[in-house]
Image (tube, rainbow, N blue to C red; front, side, top):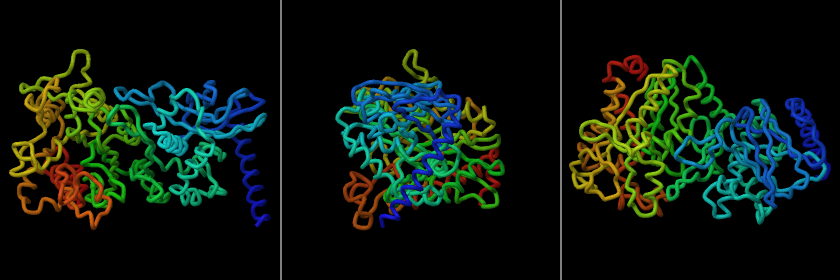
Length: 529
């Protein structure tokens, strides 16, 4: 056993030496440093070139550096006291905190210990950021950025950092082995040497999508979520399938494929396996296309997001990096844009500041507070139209799926259009109006193909009054234990907005039917089964 451990240690040491030498070559433009040095790679699956690095210690001291074109950085940290906290921010945008503006790519890392008068590896990436998020959670903070903004690491125990870093290993362990990473059982996202070269650790990072969440009550960035390249959540109970993720990524990049981007909210989202049978329609949409048609659906639709904060928090940007001329962008917002009641207890102010957009008035005129045109729902939708067309893609706009609400805005029948706000709902609405009509206004103004999925889902649910709970989320907790403690989604307390599998598939079919009914979308319709 001792001999085996000695061999393992020797192999790890040789790998570290080799990679550090390579990193030194990659960063030859950097000044050679002596003393106590922190160096590493900032990677997002490939280098985050020219990233700005801020290092903070237990005494509140700060030092800064910049990564080179290969994502490598090096910094003398003589006099600094561990643990160290590292923040990497993409160049050109310093915003890691303000949800009213587009977020920069921001990643954190925690280095529990420092070896004096030596080179210490401290990589910064999606997995290191998830470890920071886990430490933040243990400290009752809202997310990694709140921890990274603390100003010092005083009181953060090295044992906690090591424990939370190791705790995330299970989710990527098999993927690390499949990528040929030596000693994967002891992988640490911060201290394991790597290069941003698409191999080894970086091959795993390349198959991941990094998101930071959003705290509904305050509007500040929340915890880190890791997804695969098919926008499936990655966690210890749902580990990364590297081959599947790499295949999805290859299709997303393949010029022979047509990409269909879904911009949307929880009604379209892809969900974790433990939430089954909950599904969004976007989760099953790709299945409706002919295999030989080579269509790749990119579904980064996100729960709780409006048209405004979906854009600001980077979900659209993550998909648009793959878009080519002739691809399609389906814009499907409206549910969460209605969160404009400033008088709402607890989260009203945060909703108005970060999520709310206002509908057009009854005459079709845009409404927004003076000096804040971004709070117009139509203006917010037109951002997606403009950027899609700039890349040669074809934008499609849809009304929201219906809630199972009657004319009294309560669960019941007959279901009627319900995506509007009115003065009678409360005194916290600066402007009121019809969101579905604003979508129609936008379609007309921008000459967009329109699919009125609200009308289709209203007709569907009214035809299924006796069995609608088979489609919307209303499950037996005895069969699906996750829902035993949920406030809605059960037979006793149905969720009138979201779908289970049968409903997701039914809505996906309605979207496909809407495409077939729209002459301007014949080229896409021909790719459907």
